[in-house]
Structures are given as structure tokens and as C-alpha cells.
Image (cartoon, rainbow, N blue to C red):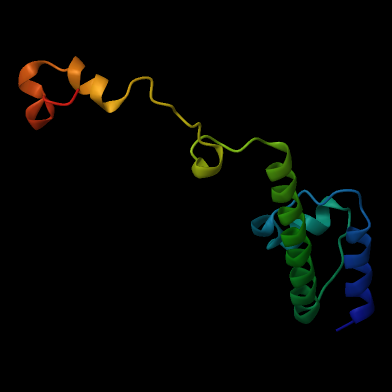
Length: 113
């Protein structure tokens, strides 16, 4: 195995301005290398090392993209409910509400007042 060749391939890809692959795409190292115009002849050990390096780059890029989306996009409705919930105030008290009910729905609360 030629570690220098593997390191140069990974360094070249690492200095490029973008890495548009997620973790699942990076498993196919030939497609990723072809995207950057690299068509080396790799033995099995080199292929494993290149794949591991590409998966690490993809994981880093994917984490950075998630962090970017979390800071740019607003939180979807339903998330963080306790933090962003609107507080409601009662417009009438309990006694007024009971008095507004029909007599047969008041139950034992009819004598409040």
C-alpha cells in the first residue's frame, strides 16, 4: 500500500471548495474520485483507506450543513413548544363562566356567585 498516494488524494479533495457528497454517496469512492477527475489504480488496502477518508469528509460536511440549516431556518411548528408557546390569558373568571352555562349544565357549581 502506498500511503503517500492515499494521502495526496485525500489532501487534494480536502482543499477543494466543496464536497457535495453525503455519507451514503461517499461509500462509492470511484464516483467521488471521478467527480474530482481522479482515476487512480488502487489496491484493496488503498481503497479501504480512501473510502474511510471520504466517509470522514462526508460526515464532516454533512454535520456542517445541518448546523448551517439549524442556524438559518426557523424551527418548524411543534418543535420547542414549551419555549415558543404563546401564553393565553383568561378573558372571564371561573364564576362568570359557570354563570354563563345553562342551568342543567352547571351541576354543583350553580351557587357560585
